Image 1 (cartoon, rainbow, N blue to C red):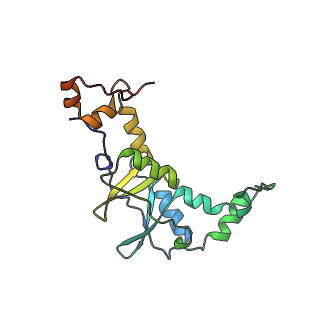
Image 2 (tube, rainbow, N blue to C red):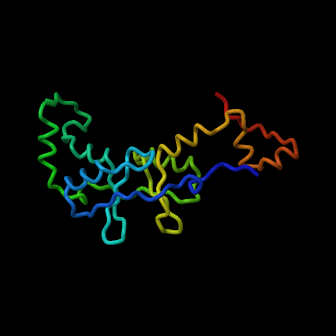
Length: 183
């Protein structure tokens, strides 16, 4: 019986990039700059308090920290960009990771890929931690999901396979009117 893949089918290894909550942003930047994980150009830094993961930070989070507050609101102001990158960095470089980290975004190892995609887009992250019985089993990235999209055969009816099972559906000649993947 064919079924739609789950997070467990794509889960990757844990990132090697780790920082402490009291580390400064210069340390975080150095760690992120030298860490590239396989096909994932946006590694996830785990913020560790001892052996416990208390947060995460990626490269986009670090760049977002650079943005002055007046560039983020509804009211748009004229921005003088010249020198702002360096000025902003000098203003936050000694800040602590704990002040810029986000809460870990997680999915369950048994979740569907669609649920994982929803969690990623809802939280605006490119990598999530995968939990297996409250233990971190690995990561799942947007790239993992996009690579899986490439493998999908547009001529197959995936919903009927997932609901009825491929063998039962074929045996009974049952087409219950579920949509086929079309392009």
